[in-house]
Image (cartoon, rainbow, N blue to C red; front, side):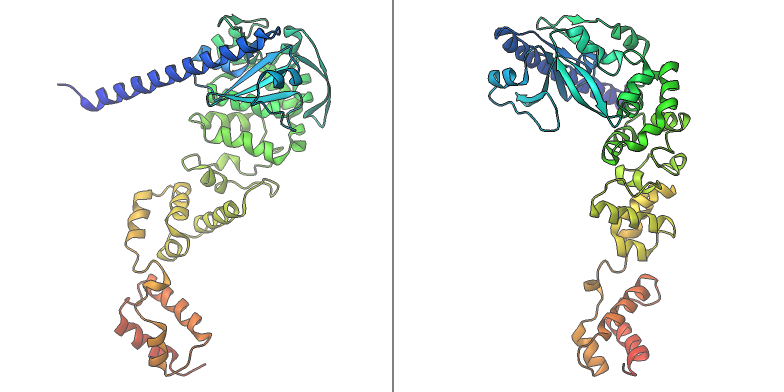
Length: 391
């Protein structure tokens, strides 16, 4: 007998796999045409880095990096739709057939500032020297316009062995740019690669430099780790290497990875320096409040289904149970209470006033706690018994 569930899953996997191959093939074709257009003008150019690495691994890439001996000005003369972002020193961004390309001139990075940014560079005409400035060997693979892979620093060996090594001295690389520490963890997580012992030792030696890294960049990299399908491994690496302290993640061992990114942050105690929008802060605070008390009719009514479901993830409560409880709420808003302001005034024989707020707050609580039925007659009797004495 055919197991249709298994057959469907195999078909779905095969279908997705074929789609990915088509996307990779299309992006590769577009990328090679970009190389051809640059070389038609007398320059040399290569696809370099993550796209080539992912191509070997059969993984779809979102962006393509291109290295060339053409200067940014010369690239902008070739491509009308190219731009030179202020934050990307010496890199030109262009879009071709919905694909994003970062085109960077071969260069040496002579001087860095604050363990992060190169503030002095020198354009060169040497691919190998350009590759030596990069972070990890697996990111130094290149591809020419004929689709041939060029491996000058033995990056393919690292990919085959599923290990991450820096280009050159690991301590020096992390001292140059502390963001590379988090990139190493992120790549290891995403690709399910190991960090070499040399890289691990250098990360431990230089982890305090993470304190000087902007909270925005730390948050970006951490979120990529936290939402990865292999996030548990990434968190284990962060803890193993003692990065929770310099990253100011105070209870990383208690992280809840079953929720969405807001739920993940809500399960953590972190430095106030991490940037969240006002809405994100509000949701995180509400989730924490529910987690620290309980999921009740009051919390469901006050904060809505989403906040309580996120809290349920953290608390290990079945979200379906929470959903059913929300659907069973006797009221979902103040308008659901079956008595009007006019009826309250007539019942108490009083004019409108600030007492309305106290009465409605009381009615909400009593109805949600099951101490009062949402019935006009019962509500009128309750109001007469408790509020007929006046202000």
